Amino acid sequence: DAGRDERASGRAWPARPRCSKGMTRLELHRRQFLVNGADRGPAGWRTFLLEDALRLHAHPDLPVRSVRDRDGSSWTLLGWPVPARDATGIVESLQATPGHEVWRLSDGWAGRWVLVGRGRLGLDAAGMLGVLFNPEQRTAGSSPALIPSLGPTYAIRHSDRMNWYPGPGSGRLALRRLLPSQQLDLSRWTPVPRPLLSPVPARTYEATLDELQTVLTRTVQGMAALGDVMVPLSAGHDSRLILGLLWAAGTRPPTFTMDRRPEMSRADQSLPERIARRLGVPHRWIPRPAAYLHPEAIDLYREQSAGHAIEQDRLYLAHGQLDHVRDGHVLLTGGAFEIARRHYRRLPAHGGLRALGAFAPL
Image 1: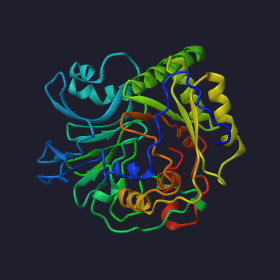
Image 2: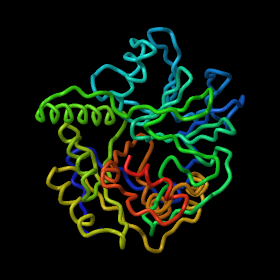
Image 3: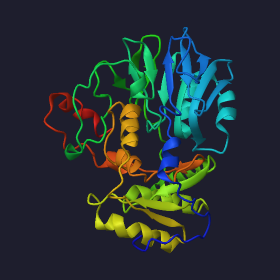
Image 4: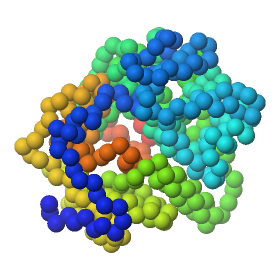
């Protein structure tokens, strides 16, 4: 379509399955988790004992590891952490670290993860494996639909530049989102501050650039080791940066661009293919069939997110544009530049949202 070729200078693109087959792969709350005092979680989930009679319930496809630090304290690690500052493995470095230094150690981890230990729950610096919690119900988890709450208190609309609720709000009464600059105190069920960055030693501008390149390159190398990497490529800075980092790390990932016209710039329609051709990596244009909209996918998305997110991801799913993504694929996406340019700089004149404005430019 539109001349988008698949230049096979590396891994070949998987054949696209029929939408009916793709739909059968969908499973509600896959790779999600809950923390509460219940003896059992949802059917088929694994249960792990935490401190203070709390239990962790995790979907079987969410990696969970129990690790003891050098002092013998127990830590529970969920998700996919990757080392960003050195080549030492996550588990090995945690085992060699005193308990009071573990949280600082985690400052050097990238990826999508949650760490529980010493009475606190913390998440990765980008909040990729999100955590919502209801203090009254003493329940936390990554899926808003699984946590008891009332609401919604207000609706999000794409026309207001609101595709999801900015933390610490959730759009539901008594349900709060944990910020990356916080940890959850599991004894009091209240958030406590956590510095996003450790002190950075003084260095020259050139040394700072070298350090950034080393950290970012090591990060994408670690993520590429998790599975078959693909890059959703647009004309934006973030996806081009990720592709450049993978290139610098010696990886040649397939790329793709989702058709989202008419809400799509000319640059987003033309540049990704040109960039991919220049680098010699495969690229695919994923069309949006105008006549195809899968109602079951919309229902599943709504039930999965409890109305917590709308727009493009929902439409990609409903139009079958994500059917080419299989188990074992790792999609590396951006989003950091949305924070840098204050994506929520034009909040609607809504009382509930106005109070959240101070949290927008994190």
